[in-house]
Every structure is written in structure tokens, then in C-alpha cells.
Image (cartoon, rainbow, N blue to C red; front, side, top):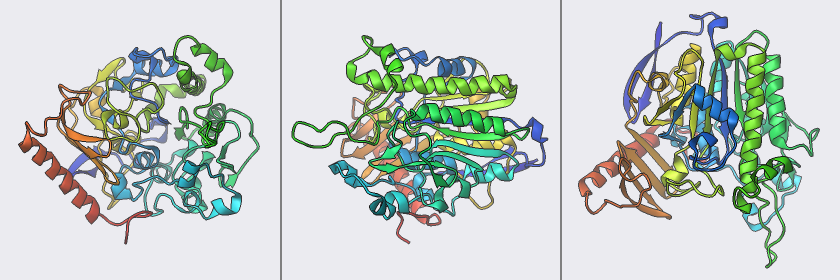
Length: 469
């Protein structure tokens, strides 16, 4: 038996773990990690606040554990997803802003030559960073990525160079659901090569198909599938021009049969968002069906989360704010864990957890040694999900350029363009009552914790693409 170390805000913890050769391969669980895109905290049918149809995710929650106090590491996709893959704060792994071509904000459509030298093609997760694919492949897993990679598109950044053996998806942070283009550039890959073989087919269906292919090709080896949907994010394509001639976003795209399910039940502007969620849920259902048909469901750990708070989803009430903000609605996300025989059924936990816990949990569950000399910012959350331990996490920190936020205990502080204040989340989940003036000593303590975290991040080993070193 070995131990691996993890660090939370400068404090070193140790937890027991098994080396890769300590468990028989057949005893290790298969791992299915599913992440959605811009799906809001309340946006599951089982929560009941919206008329969403998500029977498969609801079943996972009914047969597993749903966490209500779970956070992403950034209020938008790229840094958030980078933390999932590395187990590290965005400020530590170097991918602490979007890998995105901002000219699309002005209606610009790229040609191939211009795109080839743009940030979306030349930036990505630092090759020095160790990913879940690196670690689980070394431990004997068959590892694949299906869907939204978002860690860079140059060959050195793609999944096959980051420890995975299978990739079907897009390397950038958004595409059109049918053409698979990003503002004019074909963006789907199969392994290391761009492909247009499936052009015209709704991409959620394709991701479901390729997930089934990957599981079928895994054979007797345990598999790790990083299944990353772009749903229900808006399409990266332009819609009809506005009255003043400006180009506008096409918004969320969804097949008509799913849109029809919501007519008369939600506002018209929300029909396609809801439809995209239900279509994704169906794709997840097909993967779960495949696990059952192959008998793999008896030893598969499934984790589900959204990469950040909801946007264009009709709101995240009772949370304030949405994607791109430091309010709870931008940072707190849905989370479900399912592992028959290892996790209780129907449990709802309000323990303080984050996406930084994903990688350490996968390592412990698979009996995989953590990387030597690498500081992980989370911990194995399985005892917390089982209900046998309280969460050791008592603080979390976020920064997006000038926007800052910290949670210490139940105290939440933020300073941003969209607003600022100090809030007691135990009595004010909606962040309505700023207590900065009433609790100056608490404000000072939380700000000091944020400053200490920022110093720790600045003193860590430098990583690109944004850090100056």
C-alpha cells in the first residue's frame, strides 16, 4: 500500500492508495467521466424546478449520489476543463483563460490560412502538464476522449499526445452542431487528423456513437472514457443578421423531434436549450445501455458534471448570476456520481466539493499512483460521497483577469465587474445581502486567504500559455 500527496492552499495531506500493480486489472473499475457544456446548476429533471426531461441522468442520481455544493474552477469552459484533466487550479497548470479567437465577436469568419496562426491553433494546455490520460494509460487502462477537448488543436496538444489512445471530437471550444465548423473552419478530428466524414449529422449523436465504439473496442482492459459534450452550449456559427446588419450567434441547435417535446412547456427562446439537454441525456442513456449489455455496468464508476454555470438557460435560480460571472450561478454546477456497490443509492450531499477532486478520486478508485513531484489541488472525494467522512475542503479560490472570488467556509467574497460583496452562503445562497460593512473582520480574513492563494499560484512552477516566464 502506498500513499499519495495532495495540497490544498499550501497544506499537505496524505491519503492511502494502491500502486498500479497492487490490484488485479479485472478488479479495477471502468471509468466514464461525462461533462456537459453550460448546463446550469438546476438543469436536471430530478431537481424539479424546470420541466427538463433527463431520465438517464435522473436514474444515475437515483441510484447514486448527487452533490449540491459542487464547484467548477472557472466560470467558463477552457480553464475549467483543464482542471478536470490535471487536478490543478488553472493558475497552477497555466491554462487560466480562454483559448479563443475574439474576432468572432465582430462577425469575423476565418479562412484556413488565417486560422492556422490564430490563438485557437497555437495555444493549449502546457505539454509539461500530466493528464488523467497519461496516468491511467500508464496504469493499464484503455483511454479515450470523445467530444469537446478544448485543450488546443496543434498536434502537440491533441489527446493522442496527452496519454489517450482514441480521440473523436473537436479541439477548440465550440462548433456548429451540424457542419462541425467553428466560424467557417472544419473542426472535427478523428485521432490526429481533421475529418468531414460525418458532416451534416447532429454532433451529440456522433459523440454518442463514438462513445459506444470506444467501449466496444476496449476488450478486456479496463477503460477510461472522457466523454465531453458541447451541449447545450450555443453553436459557434452565425445566425440571421440583426436589423442593423450585425452578425448574430446561431444559438443552441437541436433536432426538431427534441424541440417539439418542449413546445408550449417553456418559453420559445428556451426550447432548443432544453432540447439539446434531452438529446444529450439520450446519448448518455445509450452509453449506459451499452455498459449493461456488456456486463461492464457492474464495475463502472460514472461521474457527471457541467463545466460551468448555465447560460441562456432561463436562469440558475435560486443562484444569482450565470456563466462568466463569479456569482454562484457561474461557478456552482450539477454533479452526480454512480458506482454500484461502492456508493449509496439516492443520496444527496451538501458537502463542499470541487472539480479539483475529480483526478485524485479517479486515481484512488483505479489504484493508480499520483505523479511524483506534482502538486494536486484536490483530494479523493469517495469517502465524502459515501457519507463516511466530511469534506476536508474549507476554501476555494477563483480568478478571471480582474474578477476575483473566494469561498472560505460559508463565506463568499467576490470583486468583479458584475458586482462585489461578502455573503454568507449558509443563509443567503442567492447572494443578495452584502455583509462587507457589517463583517469587516471576516472580509479582511477572506481577502487575506485569497492573497495567500495568489502568492502560492505565482510561486508555483511556471506553465504556459499565458504566464510570463
